[in-house]
Image (cartoon, rainbow, N blue to C red):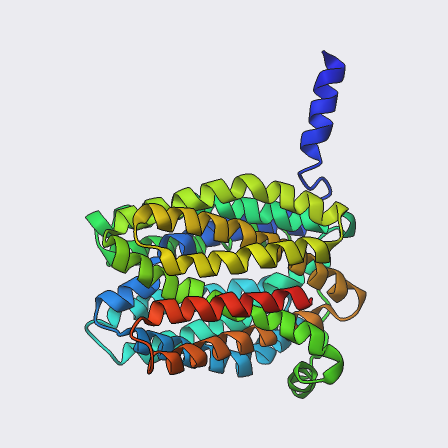
Length: 389
């Protein structure tokens, strides 16, 4: 019996990271709380703008301005993180996310708040993402980086199961204002794990000009096009939720379907993290790319809530089969040289992909009556760029 138990424990433990640094544990806790708040709001964010009268084109222009500004402010956020510390950068980003949600809610009555919302989200992104990626890349264990990323994705998946459900319930029975307030409180609480231990950090300069030049260098072209594929995320985060809303029309049902798809996804991500550590990461990446691209083209035939659930589940599974290995490759490369340089390159290229996706969809909306389907085709094609990595 003891041998059976030990064998079972060995097999199960192989799916989990066993060498988590204290900094990674703190980041896990902070991200779980932060993403619980964001998951309750995220899928309803574009739906909210759509419901108060924003057209699909206006919503896309809203995010276009955000990502254009983010591209130019991101290296400034990197300078801040290198000067004051990765965890401090994450901490200082949270008030701006709260202000973003407050401004977003007020847009319906005070349209000028859209400018405040844009500025706040740009600052939040510029401070948060360099700090987050660099903190994880610096302290994650090389031999199990895939599992550490996969375990974080699973942890995220758990909160993304509960978050949309709670978000749907709050909107249905208490309105968007209560949802935004609850999310703001959780965002503040997410800072607590990061304050448990003092961050030891040596300030290092970071060149804004070199960061801009590095993105366009020919020797980085292969990575550039792989990260460019992340442009499809703009469509899945902005256009896909609005499409779901046009099909289902009920906030609680939207939250329930999203939660269900996320639950099934989380069951598979542990396996993805393990094979990422044991197999060739690029092989895993290519398999995920093919499946994810198919998922986008299947969205062309979605016409019911059940279809949404099936396609969303397939897409989430295959996207994480891409995300885990490509992130592990990025972090591994970052740890061999300058962590911040690699992370800023990753984020800036990702932003270029999202800007390109918005511009292409905006152009297609002038010629196609079914803008959703045109956007899904664009996302399916952009997904294929991941395989270049």
